[in-house]
Length: 535
Image 1 (spheres, helix red, strand yellow):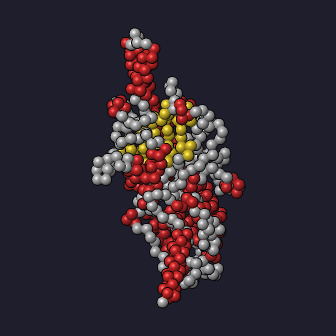
Image 2 (spheres, rainbow, N blue to C red):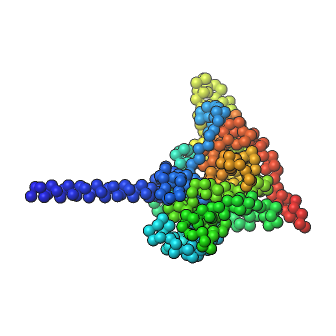
Image 3 (tube, helix red, strand yellow):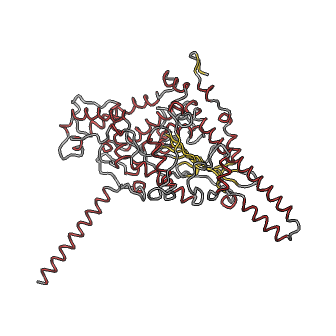
């Protein structure tokens, strides 16, 4: 009897161990789980199982062009930066945040392309063995519904939520409770930017309100598309739109690249699918591009790497990534000056914001100094120790923009045009031109289809790096005393050196002086088209 009981115990133990192994195996094969802690995809080095996938998940997840899920940057800063005791000298007094919306569903035009591709795949589905690598294509259905096309997904909400939490961790005593007078929130009228703004501010002010479970509602300002020249300038400049229409602004280099690379990729995919060469079924350039888009959304939305991505090898992905980069370079980036010059109203508004903060800070400093002088005059009969104490007390009574917002600060800021902080939520077509205007990620050469492999591989302009989902370009204004104001610019949470500045903490007046055309920019005269003449 004891032997039987012992055997039962041993068998149960074996079953438990087997189940544990199955669970662990499942975790390895499905390492991505969206939760409220972190995104595990940043750490994955797992080799993918597809026969032609000569890359790991980490590579794939960071080469999805502007559809790349958010990840923190790590810009290499040279030894010239942070050359003084910054923490001991300066206090944060204002933030201007420009963010892109988070991960989203494909838009309607992309879903339509996927449906066309699906019809073409059905024609050759009988060539796929039931137990083969591509058997999933036999019964493939498009998982994206047209009625929610372009909507922000849960991952996109979490990207902005966690981003705001890291802001709070970095500046724990800065934001305080929400007040519309101190934190202005802007988004475009497109829902994914508004929901991104809501997700970010929910994290920023979580637990500070009085509704429900201490929820804090916020006011989000928006404009109609045709009136939004700050965040949707690319839709509203007639000069730019005319250039797109008459093809003076074009993506011809991308078309040349497609003709060079896509037919070869198409033949490789056909061979991988096992379609006999004598079968009249070839992949058009459009089908190749849609396969890449399907791969991109598989990963960005569902963390699926063994479907459409399994049709592509590493070089295919790099070639397809460069194709999208050529498109953004010539239509939104350095390819044409107008692409980024039309973002001038946005940068000009940032200047106006910080100028207003500096002026209010300087005015308040004068008020504080006058109060101190008056108190000193009234206390001339006191001994030196008492005078020192009075001075210290009076200095402490002047509000400190780098600490928690208090009533004195709020009362002072009500009278100025700009809020202390501005949070803006927009699109890649907003972010890429602005970063180009600032001179970031600029190569020494234009991007063309006929560049050498070394030039292509070593280029700085990579949309997977520049503008993944939830990209954020944040400007921090610091008061370092004696009318010395410094500006720190961060791209995706990593400090980045602005060309023309000699330190990541750039003198604010020096920073402004780098952009005289922005300060003098006039939207109406720049974008006006009259009698077929562009002015």
